[in-house]
Length: 440
Image (cartoon, rainbow, N blue to C red; front, top):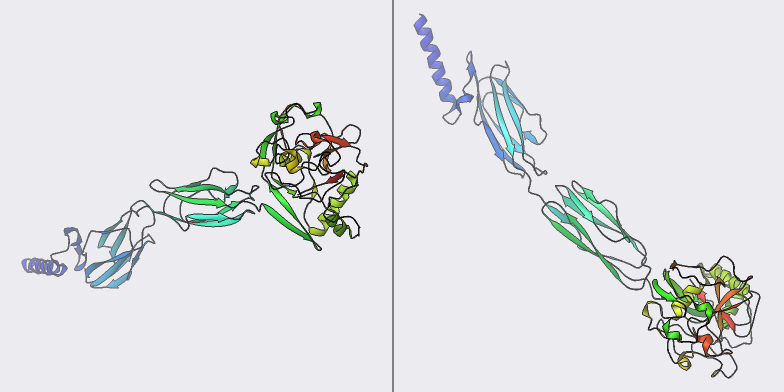
């Protein structure tokens, strides 16, 4: 009797092994008390992209499947008897391989199989949605979309560009901000993005600010010319020869930010239009017979009408512009070494003021910076010092309350028309050879 029972159990074992198939591994042949659970593999390997593979379950009992990683999905998680299970691995976005386990367990917990899942590391990538950015002279913001599955950095070595982020570990949108260009020339730079394997560059350019602003007040239009910032030697430099006065020394280095300057002196036409008055004077003549206080008051009225911030020029701004700014050819007078080409002065004026812009302009396109009328500047008059200065506005107070005059006039000799010559007057003074020019 006992031998018959043993034979029956051996026969059942052979039947179960046959039912699991020759392709099942040895460790899948566990069975207890007549229940069995067999799985067709011991591990599955996936590449980095999303894909699906199948496993075959051979069983005569209820079973369940568990996996603790959300990058693996199963076509079913429990069942009874034989089944084919689809195992899907999501795309691996990280640059290192990963692994997990799927556990098959019979309901009575006596039969259990573990399948190891291995997925390759993602290939590193770094891409950008732009390769070139162009800003207007006023500046602004642009964006760069970064696609990356590893650590990346961004760099830019100029102070007029700022980045909302300079590093990251995945996709990102980077805001690129450019401040206003203070000069009329285009400027360029490069933003560099890199990971451990790739370097990508974005070319950035910014247009220069408008070189000429044409402004209309009533029926009168006038131009403001841009002067790019720069550094120059102020005072009696070598081209002045021996004609200079002692207050033009010592020469000293001055650095200026960019600004706008009137193409001509303020004319009778502009003066009358802004103030709403009439005059019998030639409208193309420079406005004269005005005090420093009156010139300053006019600037306030013009600013209120236009919404722009007009002002008188500083003495340093006046001289830099008269010399031709960054385009200077180092002339003695504003635009020439021949005074008659550019200035109305004592020897050629016929004893009277002349219409603006009837002589040749200087390197910046400015008229009458030498001769015609003296021009009020913002500064108090004072002595120069030898040290370098940036955007100077003159001394806090001058000799009494005197203000600087520049440029010479139709009444003065050639020395007053030199680009470094200086004069001063009480701010209540008004003469037929004194006018002014706008700054912005």
